[in-house]
Length: 124
Ligand SMILES: [Zn+2]
Ligand SMILES: [Zn+2]
Image 1 (cartoon, rainbow, N blue to C red):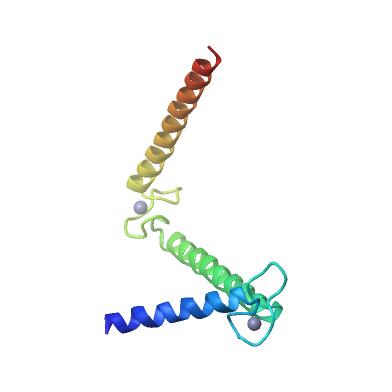
Image 2: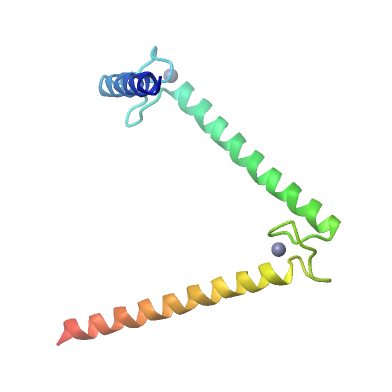
């Protein structure tokens, strides 16, 4: 069964490549692709609209969950522990957030120093 799926996927990929090579839209297989693009104008617009809708939905869901957590007095990060009064996150998540920000800054500083050292070495 697993092999069947793999074969099917390969055929799909082959078909896609074939259409792409011949300048035909692989999505509908009926129209010419737009110059410099894989899909035809209609399909590209449909795919764009679909992606946009999905992104909007995802953002919307995230926002909704966040406001629900705020309303419930829960941490917006984990949603499991109560948030510190006056804050949006629980102490644990806040500490973690701070920690990762700090780590990121430290890594950046080390990279910068290494870069400067390398450049100084090159100049010699
Ligand atoms: Zn098309
Ligand atoms: Zn939390």
